[in-house]
Image 1 (cartoon, rainbow, N blue to C red):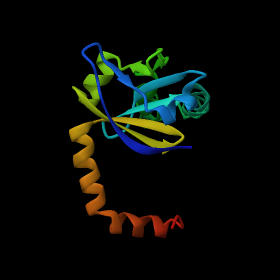
Image 2: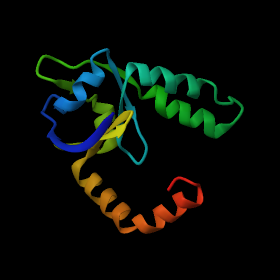
Image 3: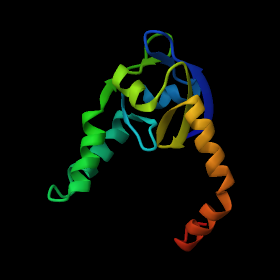
Amino acid sequence: MLIGEFTHTVDTKGRMAVPVKFRAHLTKGAVITRGLEHCLFLISTQEWETLAAKLAALPLSQANSRAFARLMFAGAMDVGIDGQGRILLPDYLREYAGIRKDAVVAGLYTRIEIWDAETWKAYRGRTEKNSDEIAEKLNDLGMI
């Protein structure tokens, strides 16, 4: 299970250390792609295969299905962890997420999200401010 929030620096070559507690989850490979709200998703190869199968099953006749599949597949890249525990964040993905120097790495059960630190701070602030309203909506769905 991937949980927790960590701040890491991205070096001038675009490399970033993966938190030690997440590395074991990615030993068999990983995929990084565009995420939602302009973050990046880092997903184990096994989880990626499950997600990719669901994306491939979306109806080709629906524009939103095609758009979402393009977002996820076209931006995807296989990544490996180097001997120092780092992954390479490709230029086009760093640009998409607005990541310059400091990044927040957040574990979200089966995926890791990588955010520009300032973008994460603003997002987290909005979410914390609206947490009661969010909880009520989830309660309506039977989640809480």
